[in-house]
Length: 381
Image (cartoon, rainbow, N blue to C red; front, side, top):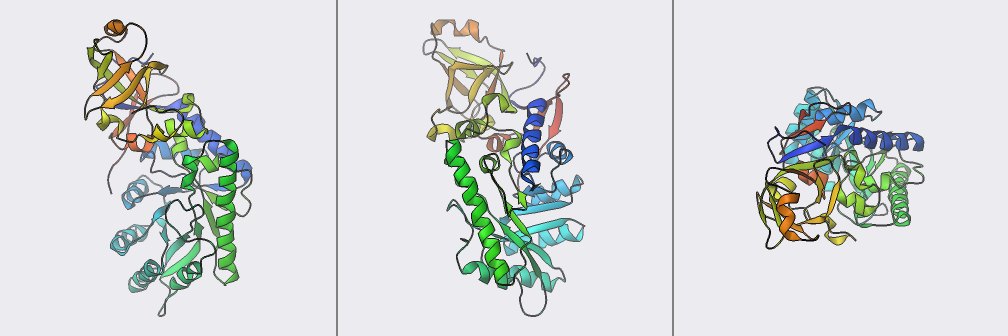
């Protein structure tokens, strides 16, 4: 049981032992499949976590904001992929980082953006490394592998008057894998992701464009791929902590989830079977990602402070700073005895990224035991 009486709640707990197991599981799988692994750091936004991923064998990281790139570079990480399509208003920021020594790779998905990126590079005497985003599942953004636009974007990276951008390869993200439920579906999506991105790379090479990098990834497909032939690197993020959505997808168990929100019981309503805590939706986030899955966990799975789930206590109602837990077991009049005011509970999150974004740090529970350690994380853009 966590000795948590002196910790002010709500706070974000991180089980270092579970996290390390998750890191090693993914890294060993990528090594066995013969690809470079570039973890997505948007999940943790924490140098202490990323340093452990790199120590396990990861090569470079992926980020979703230039602020993440800046902060991780300041922490000594110098190979970063910014995996969101770049827009002109962010190019000066990107240029400052590369001139400070960061190996930064950027992403485009349109002729317009490619032209402006190249022009900016020429104007400032710099040649950007660039990937083209490919759509392999219709989930979000990118160019379909067969679309002639793919070649036009590659051509636009070379504008008359100099070289402001260098095409390095292609990137895709099979985000629709989060909606799948069976190993067969996940394996098929992983193959669709792989084949589509490899096809895009081959089409570009046939047109005379260099395409050394073939980058794919999501946590479900990374853990489900049977082959990664033709792929050079994989990206995944939430695997480092896992969450209840990933449990519903079927790529982890509840016992693999490494983060939880520690909260305190602050009151009761025995007449309706309510246990009130100090962790509302501001502590958990409003993400209700398990609603469309077989098991809807509400705002999260309620556990004892030891981490053991309490299936009779349901977290379906929340205010900004109040969690309203519904007791569905026998004799609601005894909830004050079962969960007295001042007692601690843990809530496992639906979406680790969203819950993490509500907190300024993790209180990491060391693998060797002992006092929780503060690991800072950062916010914003």
